[in-house]
Length: 140
Image (cartoon, rainbow, N blue to C red; front, side, top):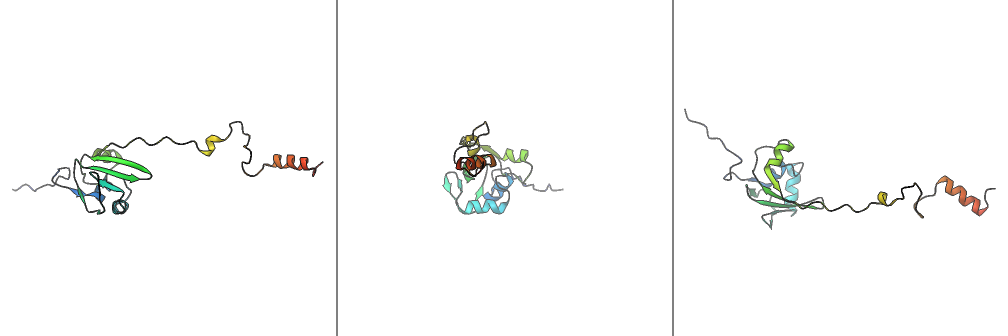
């Protein structure tokens, strides 16, 4: 009896389409979103821009991805054979991405902590309207 030939997708001789790999590695939620990112020029393969989602990748390649105002740098560890759970998808790449930038102080952080409002900070409260009316002599 002859043993059937099995295809190992993790072998370097079996490259996989880049949009498929991005989907398997859970970088994008769908394969069509991955293909759209590749065709729009947001993905670089080994430092050079690619625009074809059918471009083949294999283990050892480096991907640089512009996604959500961040730069992600991944080294492909294996190509994978399916879109599995997150723990399985993490095994497909080595993350070399720079850390995310520090968050700038938002408007909520700039508000005073004692509950008072800043001058010119929107509509006046009912209490502030009463004080304004008293100053103008409308109420006695």
